Image (cartoon, rainbow, N blue to C red; front, side, top):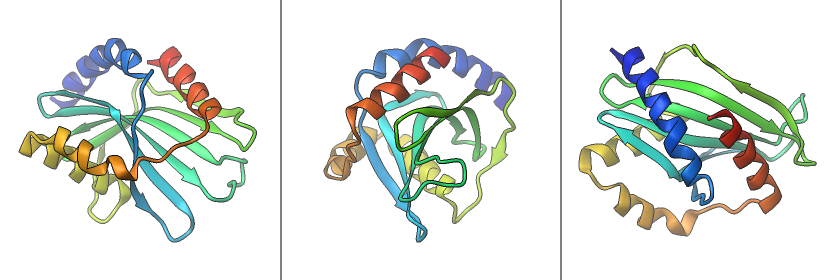
Length: 164
């Protein structure tokens, strides 16, 4: 059932998300002890029943072994089953150059595990769905919006628009 909904949702999102690409509203969801920041773009959140499509990013305080300092993900979550699927990833280095860009047609569907960053996003998105209160959460979290340089935002937008 999830796969059918996911494919339909991916098609729907491919038409919906580019319109939202002009405005981003990154909100920090979590930070790790090793300097990773995990953000979600509230402007990208789109719902189809229990299926939610959205963009996330991970910002690194230091480049990893590949030189990555920022990775953006296009993801789909099923709030009913507690599963998630990554359908695309873009990674940038400190010079804002794309060093990884991949779209997944048949990405694995993963069960979301408690205590993970993915579970924090799941809780945020799915509790908002259950409470029908995403606008309240958007307003509440606006103070925590994270700004990144326009050049980085534009590159991520361009890649996401070309892929989705």
